[in-house]
Length: 446
Image (tube, rainbow, N blue to C red; front, top):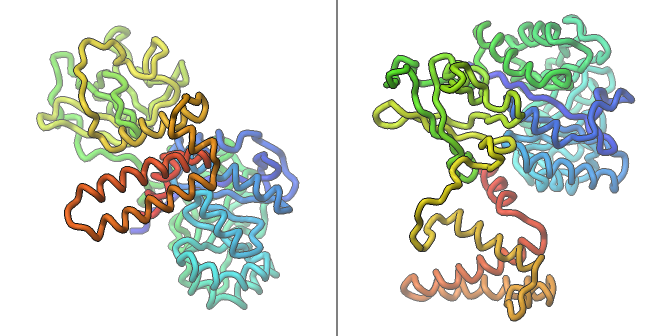
């Protein structure tokens, strides 16, 4: 069964978010914050329409898209103001999983084959509008669209009326077989949005719903998924492999929950769940506990804003403890500390072995050297000499790795790889590239 996806859209113009393509109202001057809200509310992906009109504003839009890709952990699809292959490359380099080309431009259709062969069909989508001119262009290029595009964003002919009759686009038979996401505009309330999704998501043509229709309430996404699921369609949502009865509870009917930051694995807090808290957590995706002191349900962050969004839940071997990996908003501790575990009892000196921790720590030292120079520091010597010297050293160390790899044994190559990683991190700091940028890009390539 096809899994239906729900993908909010952001129409980006002059650094602001608008509710429609032409004119419309500016509904947010913080597109990155809005994107993060959609991410935390359970969106399956995000589509960004760049409505810049020149190269300078296009570059500013790409910077915003890059920031969006950094704060969300769902796929981002970008498009708009695409004139040449370089624009598609920039969109993908900004962090987008895919880029869409619009049938509104003949030049985009001529670009389709080139970018698909260059970047892969799975990274190229089509934005198709149910209008006479675009329909004719879609028919004329239908063979190329089906051959070189992975899917479509399907725009209806009317944007000012979200009645059932005006929403669904009628695709020409020439595009049969290519599936897409139905665009729903912001001119609707929750009930209308729900009706549209329930009516059209049963159609095999649609992979899911997108559009600015979610602007009025990001929290609607969870409710709509629930309704669509109850209607017999499959959606992406948090589900539990175990029932509450499967857990071993304490005398009060509670199960302890150890909470970790999903990015760093730092332990944040310990809390408890009862059956209602467990089921609420699964349904909403927000960590919900039972407060033993207040003897009531406790949605973490409901009063402070410091929500915890579930990334994974695991049970231990005895089924009497839950491990939760979460995205922490703000801080976890009521004292204002990020983690509740800050009272050091005892510690021995030891060499750190966690690769991610070691690389992060070395990077932080290098970054600190750039801000706070230290006399005699080789790192500061490289920064003082500038980018050309740093690049020269990276090239030299890469060559040393190649030479070491031809020699027997592993000690030499280990040393040279360490040398290269150090100089690479100097380059990263110089170019303001974070480890998260690298790991996010590697994740998109899985």
